[in-house]
Length: 199
Image (cartoon, rainbow, N blue to C red; front, side, top):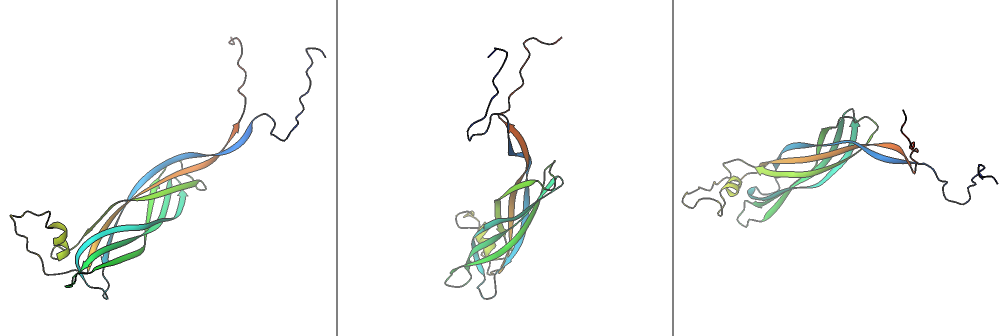
């Protein structure tokens, strides 16, 4: 066989022949976050005693139900639960709990380049939880004039009135990212460079 002649290559075996192989990857178009402030008023049911002191208020079971991508925006919808522990306004002072279930929330996150049909992923975190009540109630007195916090030289008169309602403030941080599918070639060979520059 002459040197100018080459033997044709014949593929044998079960592996893929050499050359570029297409692969689908997820490319991130953009990401963003939004803070959502929620204010709620919680009331103790009539079958339970009123509130002497609020021990703790916290948020649990935060869930995302749907993530929708529209033009340049991502709409995230979900729900959470609020639970409060309090000391009852009775001589024995037992601890009771009150809950709000399936509290909905929604957030709109601006992401330039997002289009309908793209994939999106979202997460939500609770950044802040606080409560407040009427200044003329014992719950307010326990929160602001606790024995360990107030000045001993000043006398704070403890109110006689208990309460059945209080306000809860919650701040949620919702993060989202938008992705799209791209096809790339894996194992492609770069074109050969000329030995001498042209021109």
